[in-house]
Every structure is written in C-alpha cells, then in structure tokens.
Amino acid sequence: MGTEIRVLVGGRRDSRLAEPDAVLAAVEDELVEFDLRLSRFRPASELSRFNEDPRDEVPASALLRGAVRAGVWAAQRTGGLVDPTLLAPLVRAGYAASWSGTRSVALAEALGELISFEGQNRRVADPAVEDAGLASVTHTGPA
Image 1 (cartoon, rainbow, N blue to C red):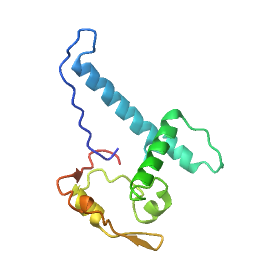
Image 2: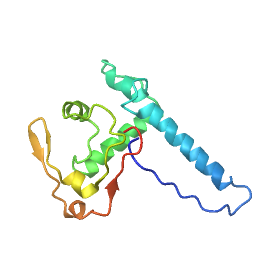
Image 3: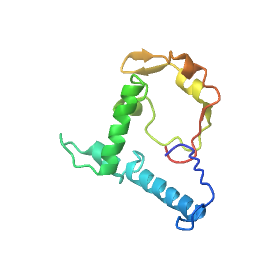
Image 4: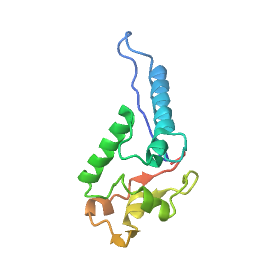
C-alpha cells in the first residue's frame, strides 16, 4: 500500500484468546488482502476494475464501499487536502505507477510542496501540518 504499518500486539492474557503470533499473521493476511483488492496499481484489483468501468452505477463490495466512505470522510475532514476523487489529475501529474523504492520524505516536506491540479495551486496553510516534522511518509511496498 505504499506505506509502513506497525502493528503492536501485547501478550496473551487469556488462554481463550489467540497467540500473539497468530494475531499478527491474521492482521498481515488482512492487510495483504486489502492491498490485493484495492490497489490502483494492480490491474486486476476491484478498485482498478471499478475505476475502468464506464457505467454510472457499478456493483461494489462492502470493502470498496467502506474505503470510499473513508475517503469521502477524509476529504471532508481535511477540507480537501485528502481527496479520493483526484485519480485523473494524479496520473497527469506523473503518479501513474507505484513509488515503491523511492526515498522517504518528512510529512511536512511532502505536504508543504506546492501542488497544482487543473490550474489550481494549493499550499498547506495549517501550522499543525507545517510543524509535523516528526512524522514521515515511508514507501515500502506498492503504493
């Protein structure tokens, strides 16, 4: 998914619960399945097929519908800083393939860059984002 994910699992406190290693394996399986089904860089993924479908109404799984709801929520919550509807402008801007293996950059650097989509220039103006130098974006797998 083009990101680094850390899952912390504590020790087992109840013998009826799964062993921590089994929990981690199940979480990893779920994340791999999510990536296989929703990566826009996998032509056979549900998301890729959805994006290519010319119909006005397209059947979608609960997973895809949930991801779309989360994307719309993020767009509303961030005032458009996160926007799941920008596929065409992203591709035109050069983000047509995975950035796997590229260098990591500080979040403030990544968000502070001038972004231009369809003639609209936007700059991050939120001081909380500008001061987020401790956060980083790391690409460790297909984005």
